[in-house]
Structure formats: structure tokens, C-alpha cells
Image 1 (cartoon, helix red, strand yellow):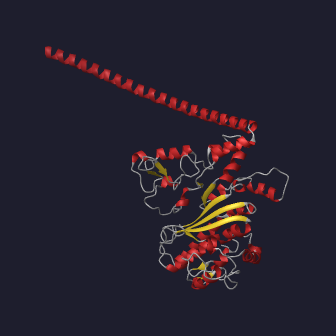
Image 2: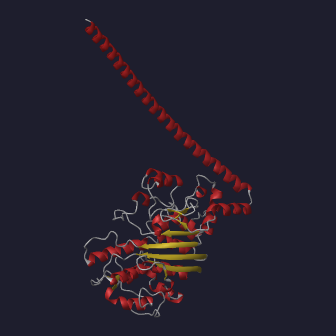
Image 3: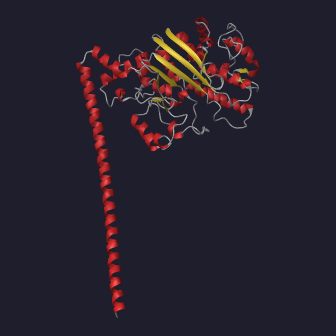
Length: 453
């Protein structure tokens, strides 16, 4: 009997323990649920508070800049702009690809390039840059050792040296800065600040995508209407854009990805068609720069053009030379416009090819037409100057296969004479001309009409 009684007591104890355990688990679940609800409420409150703080900060900034604009004389405002907006460094604007090889979307990427970092715009807001870095372990410096393609270098004394290969240094005033954002500053202050910023500083921008178009302000929805108003001298208020103020500009023509998305094992005809499409797209990417040169024809301009090529994946040396000359042809009219049509311009042309040379080479002498010769060429092609591609395709060198009547350009077999008579050079490795440019088969008229497909 005693054993039975002990068993009942033990069962009762076990049951009580089980009930207490269930109650504790239920209490834990309730506490977890309560904690989660409180966390959600706190997060919502934090987001709301952050939003309110941002709105208040914007309002205070606008109020302060409005007061500055209304109360301070122009001389003091200029001193403030000089302190806040002057950079002694070249300001990179647009995509970060402009200092290294551009890797187009859906194209085979080198292993050592982090894809998620690639698409962080150099003009992105500081918050976006930090968020992108914090959310990606590949980009978080605390999770790995620095790599050769990082945007910073630890110096021996502990300081950090930034490289704007990926993005500008954090202390640099970029075109997307809060000081140049209408959400933060009053309209009058913004107009004066933009004028000072773009007029005073030096900028570097490449032709990838719409970088030139966007940097110079041509992406504005009312751009064409406003430009027509100023062209027709209408009495309507004229809106100004960055291209009205920029004085010093470095333009990087990205020709280094010309073979990136080409078909594997393609025929020479297919390869050349791909090359032609690439050249047309590069020419069309210069539209914004044409606006800039047109509007800046009478002011002092300091422009450096850097032609970036990489033909290391091509087998034949003839392909290297032909592609380089075709690349020069794409930018030729734009560069001559800067040299001869802009009255007070200083123009420098560099060729950058890491595979062939360690340092960029000065190719300014490649554009040796006199102003009279340039005017003669423009007059001959005046009926085609407004065409999307001008007359550039009449002077492309065709790869090996015969030139079709509708194709335009010259066969590759004539490259030596073409180089001599059109450009005045013996070799593409030369930096000074060996011959004068003379009128003949290769200048000023080419073989057309240009292909329109």
C-alpha cells in the first residue's frame, strides 16, 4: 500500500511540475510576443521620429539659407560659398566606372569586382552609400581584409587614403550634396551656390550611359522647352543648367569595353557589326557634351579628353589599330568642336591603355586640322551636321570583308594610307604627326552614305 501511495504522490508531483513548465513556456511566449510588439512599436516610432527630424532639419536649413540670402550682402555670401563649396580636387561625377574598365550589365564580370558595389552611384546620397556598405558583408570593412580593388588604403601612420575608383571621398562635395539640394536650401541660395560650385571646381565625368547628359543638367523634363526659349530670345525667364557654368571638365571616353559582350566564335562580319553598333552608341552618348560646347563657345573652357581603350582580347594587331582609329573617329567631331568652335578653349587629349602603356600618353597632336580646314570640312558636310551621327560613319574602317554600298567607310586594307592622309601619322603609337593632312581620298569627304540601321 505504501508503494501505491508513493507512486500517486510522485505522479501528482510530476503533474504539478509539468503544469508549472507549461505555464513558464506560455509566459515566455507571451513575453516574446510582447517584446516583439514593443519592438515593432519602437521601430515605427523611431521611423516616424526620424522622418520628423529630417523634415524639421530641412525646414530649418531652408529657413537659415533664406535668411542668409535675404540678409547678407553678396560679398559675404560669396565668402560662404567659397568656404563650403570649393574643392581643390577633381570631383568625380556620374558612375564610378570612369577610372577603371566599365563592365556592362549582363556581361562576364571579373571575379575581383563586387557586383553590388558596382551599381552604387558616385552621386548617391551618403545614407544610400552607408546603407549599401552596411547591408553587404562583401562591402563591410569589418568582415574582411582590404582587397586591391577597395576604395581605401590604410597608410603606415594609421590614416586612410581614399580612392574614388568606387566612390568619391566622404568629405568631398559632390553634385548630389545637401548643399545643392532644393529640399535643404532656399531657391535663391541654391541658384547662387550652383553657379559658384560649377564655375569654380573641376569635374571628371565619363560617357557611360547618360552620365554626361545627367551631369550637365540635360535630363530636366523642361530642358528642350527652356533651351528653345533661350535660343529664340523669348522674354520668358531662362532656367540655367550646370553646362552654363562649368569651366573645367575632364571627359573620359570609355572605349575599353568594346569587346565585352561580343559573340564568342563569331565571324568577322558579325564581329564588325557588333563593333559598329558599339561605336554608334558611344557617339550618341556624347549628346550632352555637344550642348555644353554649343553653350560654352564664347567662354573660357579648360577641357581634357581621355580616350580609354583596351583591345587586349583581340588577336590581330590590325584589329587593334582599326578599332583605335574608329574610336578616334567617334570623338573626332566633338574634339574639333571644342578646339576650333569654342573661342577661348584649352583642349588636351590623352590616350589611356593600361595594357600597352603604364602612363597615359598625350595625343593632342592627333587633332592637327587647322581652323580653316575644319571649317572646310563642316561646310562640305553642312547638310548632315544635324543628323544623329553626323558624317562620322563615312570614315570608319571596315574589317576585312568587302565594303557594301550602303555601309560607308573604307576597307581595312587601306589603313596605312588612311592613317597617313587623314590623320597625318605613320603609326598609332606615335604622338606627333609625320605628314600634313591633305585633301584627297580620305579627307574631307568620305565614302557614304552612312548606314542607317
